[in-house]
Length: 194
Image (cartoon, rainbow, N blue to C red; front, side, top):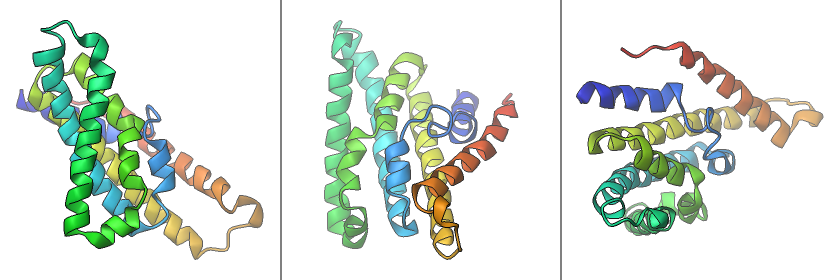
């Protein structure tokens, strides 16, 4: 069971990264990557919410929704759990890290609407065989998102110091950079986990 969980973890970070393979989480990826500090804060916040919501979605699916025939309420229940976790995380960040809270601003509540968080919860409901595997998928998805977010933010900060041709400035160079990162991560698809 531990080997399967590690396989799921590494596959979610590198091979099946939700941002570059399934295009989930692109809004915060592009929106919160302007500064490295805000990207770091959002990566940490997403790590907390995504991992806990992955575990909670597995438990709710297998111990409440399926046994009582309430699977038609799956999306509504998962969104409520995600929203509650985001609120809890926002309270904790505001109380303990006001500077990060100021950097993230509107992006903290937007984690609730991040399609990647709901996507991982729904995939867990359908595919995960155990709570450990569900938590590994949530952790791997959030680590993969955080890795890409920090890499992209660092590249965007570096681009501000470069002499980018006018036609490529702004969204154009950002999308080209994101595409090149996705191309780089596609090399991981050749990895085979035993």
